[in-house]
Image 1: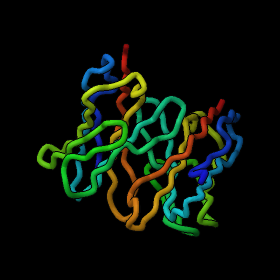
Image 2 (image 1 turned 180 degrees about the horizontal axis):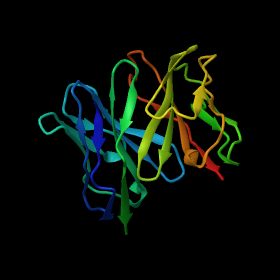
Image 3 (image 1 turned 90 degrees about the horizontal axis):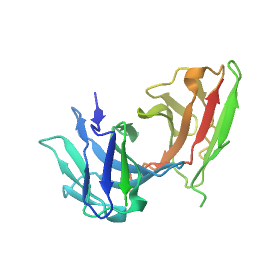
Length: 113
Length: 115
């Protein structure tokens, strides 16, 4: 069965500092990997996705993630965060023909001035 | 395009009442999904549909029903509301074609409280 683990429920960071949000997955089949962002009181918005090809994926708002098959990880990074990046970030995997998503429990990125 | 729209935004129900959460999309997506989001739990799939007339259960379907009579609409029905159904509900859609494959687009959510 597929599952997604986000070990950090909250990551506090100062503005302009780098950040890494961790995501590990388990799956016996090939999966597609996603990061979604949820701003307060809003729906989810796609940040980036890995389907195939280059293992380094660039997304919106300066975020990037690296797919590591041997470590079954898909960590999200940003070299310099802004106050506006404060949000909840969800890692997800999809599998099969119906694009169903399995989400991690989310990481709250709290950017402080 | 309005994208994915959900109504209502907020609702308070009494135990045992019924209601329908509405979801519509104008992107001609064939796949649609319902999720619930509980604090610290991420999103769990309730039901999904791969096209008009075709629906299937997700991870947490108990207490809910769905129908898909048109491509655009995917309502979620709660028949006998229970406090355990207090949650934020999100509808999403995606397209199975090659363009933008696998990206799900989410609505703004419905916050439901059952007292």
